[in-house]
Image 1 (cartoon, rainbow, N blue to C red):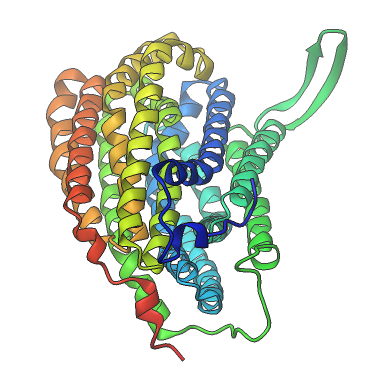
Image 2 (image 1 turned 180 degrees about the vertical axis):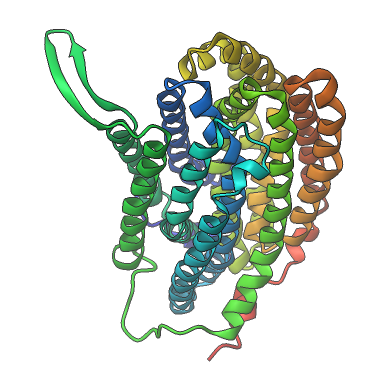
Length: 478
């Protein structure tokens, strides 16, 4: 795939791409992102299997703080989006010099915020597992895992910001390749750090595999090292290899009020949503934790297993952000609507298929993740409940990406907040005491279906097309 897309074939005022051409562009941008997400899923499966082989306590230690890692990660994604959406709209409007200015400001903001949120995470790491009602044998490993995760957040945010800027400029290939490489690095580092030195026996070949034997802490260190290497590589390709955004002389490294104001307008609703929905995930963890170590482990592994279904949706959602953002910058509202509809329909179709596969293959998937029969049985049960929500879950994921490309972040954030707290947490509190973990996942399934319907209504009404975009906001900049 060519790295740079000739956007004039689609976005020029006189261009009128046919439906097959539009669908081809959606697929062209979606496939690399989906492949990267699938490789990420493979990494999560291998990570979970590595840690799962250490026993239920090790799995529960990571599962206990996973909701908090999602919260911190979601905030990082929000910060990155505030700058990358501007870049999509500015490059779509042909304003490359201003896009490069936004790039510089985005990188500086990402590094500064990464250090800040990393310090916050490190500060709460000691007491977090106890506050989440973790069992005594689980808390020490959970605390160490979250501390190491927090220390790697500056590199994680650098990777996310650089990758999303590349994607929004139309380069889906580079971040996809680097994210796949990160998965391979993570597996390699984990293999060296989790397990002790051991003898590996293969047909006709025996060798000694070195290892640090650090267990859960090794899993955290392996992921942190993979994030650091990939974050630095992503920034290098953004700054020195991107056909659109590579650094050129004459563009100053300074913060500009209008750019930061636009970034805050885009990021703050998303960040507020991630904080409150992250709080809902943490509340869900507190609901699950009293159900026992097996339930916590099954819940954590089921989330990993489900990602097989929904991560392709996030890949298509990234493509939708780029397509709608570029079309918005070019003032092609007709293409904004068409790309949003095509992307959402594609995501729903793919996740309907993956949801069906998840339902059928749930026992086999859990057999790969853990040798514990009790965790396998409970995890299979909840995973099959969740399979019914996947098509409408896709609608919420991809539609949110399309709306984000148009600069519509406030209303989607409100919809997510109402859905999470008004339906999922409320129903989980009611169902968990009576039905255990299956009740919690039934509440999640119902909430995702409601959320998908709400996003489809928002998409169909078309008010998101009236958002003020970054090109108009920055036109006044000198």
